[in-house]
Length: 155
Figure 1 (tube, one colour):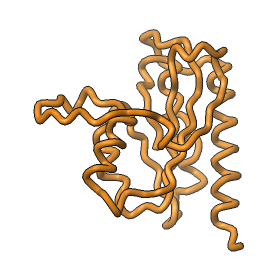
Figure 2 (figure 1 turned 135 degrees about the vertical axis):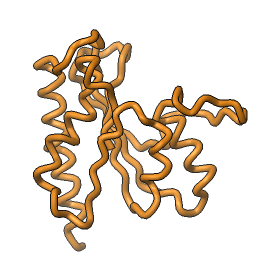
Figure 3 (figure 1 turned 30 degrees about the vertical axis):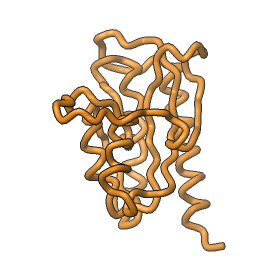
Figure 4 (figure 1 turned 60 degrees about the horizontal axis):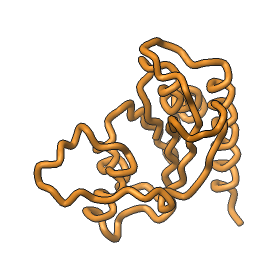
């Protein structure tokens, strides 16, 4: 699942990663690719039936230089459920949506959710990634391909 807004320069890096992976998995029955854009709450519906989820997104104001990669389990990201029936679903971020999904899906919630975050600065209204962030996105594509190859290999 790639998240971001491609109209906000480097914020679109999650969508870029998905676009780069699509040709390799076009006919795959085991790998689903989702360009989620900014539609975080829909994450809930795409989690069902998957053993493993990999999320890719940009992170702003991390304090690191643009292009810095982070890989961590989704459980390390502390997003709290807002138990308010008036929560505006379109304003949720994917980490908040995962919290809701865990509560709603219960035992069918996937155990293995990994997150790749790429540090960015440029979120100006423009199309295209900076060279630094595009290079980081390409590194994430290679890491995901390597992870999936290891995951697919029988022990």
